[in-house]
Image 1: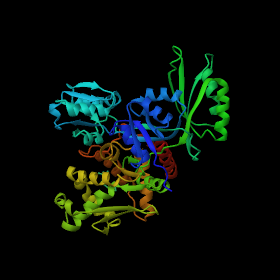
Image 2 (image 1 turned 90 degrees about the vertical axis):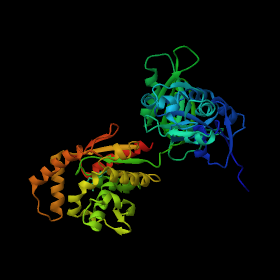
Image 3 (image 1 turned 180 degrees about the horizontal axis):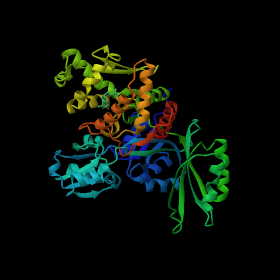
Image 4 (image 1 turned 45 degrees about the vertical axis):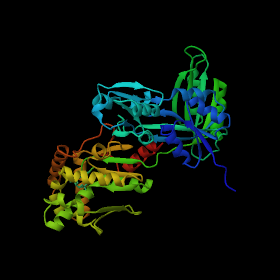
Length: 495
Ligand code: DC
C-alpha cells in the first residue's frame, strides 16, 4: 500500500526562502500549503490541515526571527527537524539594467544581509521594506525603475532578470529552519533539544537554572533572551543543547531545571543538522605542512582532497612537454583536460589528458618554470574555475596560497597554517635528508625567506590570510596534532 502523501505548510508564496527550504526538507512529491504568515504555518499544522510546517528560526547574519520564537513559546507542536540553508540573495528587475533602478524592495532581514553591497552599488536607490522577498519581486515586476532582493527562484516565477547574483555581504549567510509536527521526534542518536524557560526574580536565578547542564555534562549550544510579553522587563530564555529529551542525563537535568525555573517548556528534540557539502580552504606559506595535514584530514573525514599546486605544476609540465617552454601556454589551455583523484590510501593523483603526471610534475624543471605560469592571471582564472567546479558536489579540503582569499572567499572554514621560517627550513632539510639528498642548510633557509617574500608580493593570488580565517601556528606542533586541530575545527563548522 502506498504511504499517504504528506502535506507541508510554509511561509509562502512559492519562491520564498521558506518554500525553497520546504522543498529541501520534503522533496517535491508532497502537498504544498503556502501560508500568509508564520502564525498561519503553526495554525495549519495545529488544525491538522498540514502534517508538517516549515518556519525560519534564525539567520547567521541578522539573528533570530522573533515571530517564530514567540509562536514556539506558546505552541503545542514539536520541533521535529532542523536544517541550515545557504541563503544567496540576488538583485532582480524587469529589464536587468542596474542603471535604471531607483527603488529596491525586500524583506527587512534580506535588506540587512546586503546593506554594504547596496551602499557600494546602489547608493542613491530608495530602499523599501515589504513583508517578504516574494512580495518584493511582485513590486519589481509591476513597477518601473524598481528591483527586488530575492531568491533566484523568484526570478523565474515573476519573470525578472538577475541584475546581480550573490549580493549578500557575508558569503557565509545561512538561515536555520525548523520543521514542526504534532508528535515529538524519537531519538536518532545525535540530537539537539530546544527549550524555552523563564527564571524567578531572585539572585543567581539564571546561574541556578543552568547549573544542571554542568552537573550532567550537557553541552549548551545557544541561549537567547526575549521579552516575555507577560510582564514589563521580564524575559524568556530560548536554549539549545546537545542531547534528546529521552536521554537519561537530559531527562535528569530538565527535572532539576523545572524545580528552579518559573516556567519551562520543551520545544522539541530533533536530529542535528550537519552541513554536508562543505568547502575547507587551507592556506599558508610554503613548507607549513599544508598538504600532508590536508590529506590526512581528508582521509579521516572522508572528504576529497584537492591539490591546487598540482594544477599549476601540471600546466607547466604540459607547456614544457609540448613546446619546451611555458610562454605559449595560455593559447593551449583549451586542449588541456586535467583530472585529479584522491585515493583511499590518501594519494592525490593528477592526470593531464588521461596521463598520470603525478611524479613528472615534481621535477626540478617544473619548479624553475612555474612562476611564469602561476603569475599569469588568465591561467589563474582557468585553474580557479576548475577548482570551483570540482568543489561543487562533494565536501572538499583544498590547500594553496589563495584558496580562502581568491578561489573560495565563501569557504565554510578557512585555516591559515603557519610556522616560523626556521622551523619550515628544518622540516624541508629533514625531507631532503630522508630522500637521501645532499642539503645546503643555509641555502634552504634563504630560499624559504625569499619564497615568502615573493609569494606575499605576487600581483595575482598573493599569499595572505583571509580576514575570517583561523590562524594556526604549527611551529611546535606535530603533524598529528595539526590534523587533530583541523578535524576539530571541521566538526565545529559542520554543526
Ligand atoms: O604547493 P605546490 O608547491 O605544489 O605549488 C606549486 C606552485 O603553484 C607554487 O609555485 C605555488 C603555486 N600555487 C599558486 O600560485 N596558487 C595556489 N593556489 C597553489 C599553488
